[in-house]
Length: 94
Image (cartoon, rainbow, N blue to C red; front, side, top):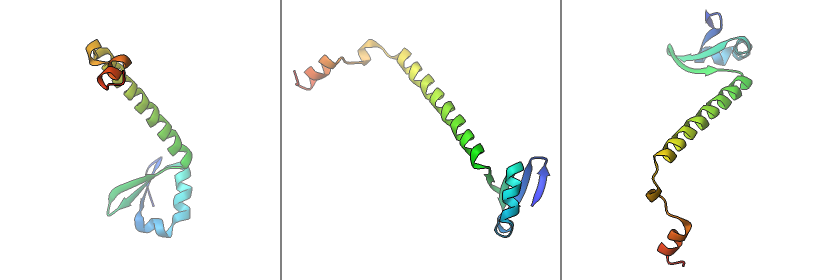
């Protein structure tokens, strides 16, 4: 394990196999970057932090989709929509 910054630890995949307990301890106090052949492969984070990240990403996605929907709604014209009566007539249900 190599500490490159105050809050980042680099761990090779081979080292992960032999030093799992030490890596898990390091993960509690710093980011652990998993490397394979000197290339970053993954970042290990505690599950609580992962859940927070997921919640933030979902919130951002929801807001982005809301903006897209609002923009489409503003750009839509009356002729772009059919009423229920019009649809029923076109389908021969009335």
